[in-house]
Image (cartoon, rainbow, N blue to C red):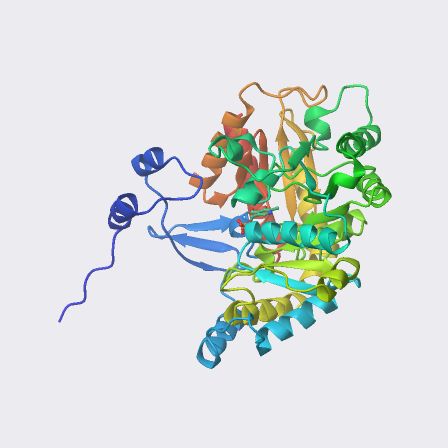
Length: 453
Ligand code: PLP
């Protein structure tokens, strides 16, 4: 008997268009153009259904930190699926993979983080962080502390709480109802928002002091937490000036406001440190984790809780929060295998000392004196490339986001995955990328940018 022929790209596209609603997509436009069908992956490369090899300059959605095709992760999942595919951690039960993962995370996060709560995504992680924050203040007898301050152009996910925390208009527009008591301050985006005469250091302080002003406006007794990404990822890979985080930390301590670092992108080696708050040198109270925790092989998120926050929660009755899949055994087993690879292969150290500096210097060589590039921002294996009409004056293109999208699409047609955010282009490749692969990414990005501008 003849076996059925493999589906063609046209077959895939017809079924996709008929039945699949894509996230963050204009479905009409997408269906007219047709999705690219990704069928397999290995290392830093993807293959589409037409057999094209594509270099993934984004590690999926900033998550495939150990690269594609790692058998260790597949085997960990397979073993765990056979042994114990599911059990929950409610109602006085636990299981070996989640115990192992918690102990492992306690060993690799900075010393004060000893307790971990699990969920399935970064968005749920931020919802969880808010629940922990409120629970903490209630346990401290300070239930009036309920305002949470976040930032414009931050991204914290797509659940109602995550999208409210985020500061992107597009995420708010289709949402008539938001979580109450979340307010926003301005972002520390020097290139785009600093007045001409201000130094980056002065601008960093000014933007940090907006937090102080907002706390004083709301009343310190009413402010529970400040939530921010150590560097903004989806907002354009915006690295704050060096003065920003020390001042934010000082303000949070002074007014007794919890500091939540959303490490969903920055965690697990992206900047060359295990966690990006270590790159900036401050100490948060909570860390939101996801993406690189499992390198995206299976979904998992977590919140790391500083001992000073965990202690009153551990001692004060039931915490009414959780998910069917909190600490899912297969996800936990994959996470442990993933963390083992990151540790035993010295992947994070290589990002810090070798591939990260090479990536950053290659990008700066390609774009540092480019007539239409305003800055290359980033550290380790993450970078934002700012388009500019006039880099010296920091003048931006009126249609900068259209140009960035055109660059992104041209790169995509040239088999490089790169992203656009406003008038910035973003690269964030798997942490196992080699020098030769970095050369390929930078060459393709430069070609796409030069051909578009
Ligand atoms: N927080 C940050 C900083 C993110 O970049 C993202 C996703 O990109 C999220 C939270 C949301 O994570 P998820 O898409 O897994 O819900």
